[in-house]
Image 1 (tube, helix red, strand yellow):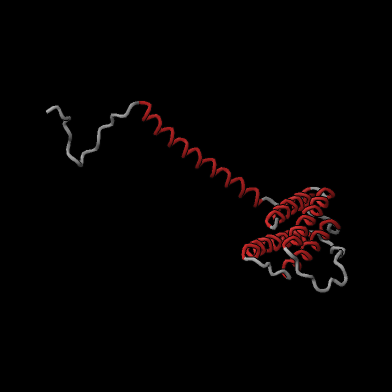
Image 2: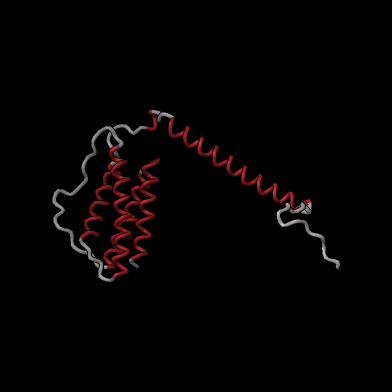
Length: 181
């Protein structure tokens, strides 16, 4: 007999929420709205930055740096070595596919950087590379370690976005060495 009186099932429940519960709901809403505003503002900033013309001092002049061209040549040599390697075990073959995809991305980024210069690059490619021998797992690890070291050294000789690109490639190649380690 002491049960509370309830209204019909279709009636809206009374708001008996404590003031702090109500404040928490508003706070959640405020956070969501604030987050949406921040995202919209960031998107607008990105759009403005993308539409703004690039200032001429940022455009490369002359020939691409020799270090950048050498890095592109090294990526091509490393890709040829990876392509000649069958991998052996299924785990190594899976790693090889991922590493190859990464090196293709490196080559694409390096080629775009070289192509951004108005004058043609001075070739650093060897005149007769010939066939590339297949690498063992330890050979793959060693090749990636050497590539990481060379890319890091080249990054230290460059500035700006080219240095950042080569530093990123060096880090990637160091992780590849771990995959084969």
